[in-house]
Each structure stands twice: as C-alpha cells, then as structure tokens.
Image 1 (cartoon, rainbow, N blue to C red):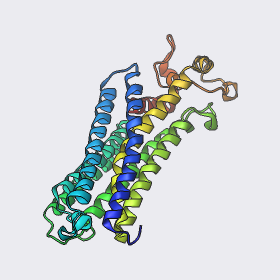
Image 2 (cartoon, rainbow, N blue to C red):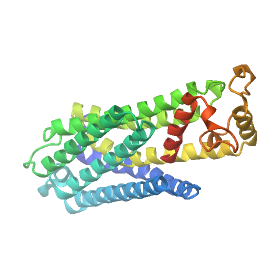
Image 3 (tube, rainbow, N blue to C red):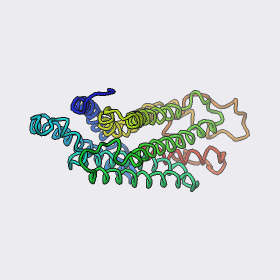
Image 4 (tube, one colour):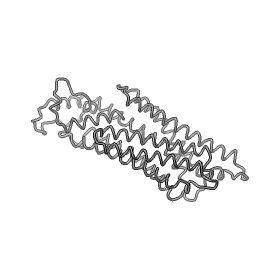
Length: 334
C-alpha cells in the first residue's frame, strides 16, 4: 500500500475491519455460550463474560464510527471544493477520528489487562512477575491516551505520522512487550508443569495443546501489532487499515483462547480411561518405580481438581502439587 491515497486506504480499511468484525461477532456468541456452560459461575467466569461483552460493544462502536466517516467523506464532503474525501480524512483532529482512536486504545488496553491478569494468577508469589506487567500497563495507558489528546489538539495540516509520534510509537511497543512478556511467562509456567509431570510423557501431556493455543494466539496479536509498527515507522497510509483491523483482532484472540481451551478440556473430560489412569497413579506409593506408571492420556479436569477421596494429598511431590494449583487458577481465567 505504499503511496496509496487516504481515500483508497480508508475503503480498504473498512472492508478489512468488516471482515474481521464478522469473525469476532460469530466467535462472541460461541464464547458466550461456552462460558455459560461452565459449571463454575464464580467471579472469574463473570469477569470473562463482562469483558467479552465490553469488547463487542467497543468493536461495534468502532466499526459504526468508521461507516459514519465513510458516508461523510464520500457523500457529504465529496465535492472537491471542500477537499473531497482526502481532505476529510486528513483532518486528524476531527471528533470522530479521535473517538475511533480512543476506542482502539481502550480495546487494546482491555486485552492487555486480561493477559496481565492471567500472568499474575499463575505467579501469585513472585512480585517481580506482577510488577512488570503492571508498569507496562500504566505506561501504555499514559502513552495511549496522551497520543489521542495530542491528536485532538493538533493544528490543521498535521499528520498522524508527525503529531504524537513518540507517544504512538511508545504505545505500540509497550502493548507488544506486555503481550510478549505475559504470554511468555504463562507459557513457561505451563511448560514447567509439563516437565514436572514426572511419569507422564511430555509429548503426550494434555497441557501441550494448552501451551500451543496460548503461543499461537499471542503470535496472532503480535503479528497485528508488528504490522502497526512497520506501517507507522515507514509513514505508509496502510497504517489506517492496520489500526482498524487490530480492534476486532483483540476480541478474536480473547475468544479463540477460551473456545479452544474449553473445547479441548471438554473432550478430554469425556475420556473415562484417562480418569481411571489418573486414579491408579495417585493411589500408587511414591516409592514405586516411575516405569510402573501408566502412560495413557490423563484427564485434564481431573489433574487440576480435588484428588480422589481417602487419598493423603500431603504425600504428593510438592513440584507437582504446587504447579497444578497454579495452573488450576489459570484455567479459571480461560
């Protein structure tokens, strides 16, 4: 899109946003159904439902504003005397343009808060892990809304590539770092749980798909943010298309994680052989050779639930019990 005009870029942008919004809208109802099917209706589930609804509302408002801007540009301001569509889109201090950017910043911050929350859940006793995403979130909030304020007060003739460039660049970099750090930290915790499984083979662990889901979802969002950074630094008008696409992508990533993890957990939960295998493992003495342990797939829900009755949990290896409790808390946020 190098050298493409503003009016053509905006038409491409609304096409791409409509496409991604349709995907998010479909995933929204699937995710909502999945969350309502959960047996536990605790604070975590309610928080996920509220967050999901807020994301849909923000994404809907964002695409609605974009359609209004298209009508104003190509219908109301179509005469060349008023600058035409290009002149309309060049006004970066226009209230609708500011509102659209505020929604994008808020949507991105909402996604960052969710991934930071999950990170803190699996590292409740490590303050450094909790401090890093908190600092990144505060810095992202300041840089994001400051950039919107500078756009609102920009003089006529200014461009988004000049006004608030340090603030926009900082926001893009900070949100990328937040997701990379938190996703990496969560992934490491899950991988540690896989390695500490002892008799359970790493390659056949039920947590491997969980790890892959988290990594793939993080990579999807990271790719979208990288597109923002590249187009912004290069000064390409393709930035507007990338900005409009990222907003629903935040909701898509949020929904996909919940749907994929819950679908996999439900499928494994129906594996009664896995449940029996786990029970036989838990009831074996710790002195038994690890070669005596079965290597059948283990039910995911059973691993992270209360042990079978009449079993002394104090005799379990701390490395397994400690990790499983933390991962169980993670599953409450998925």
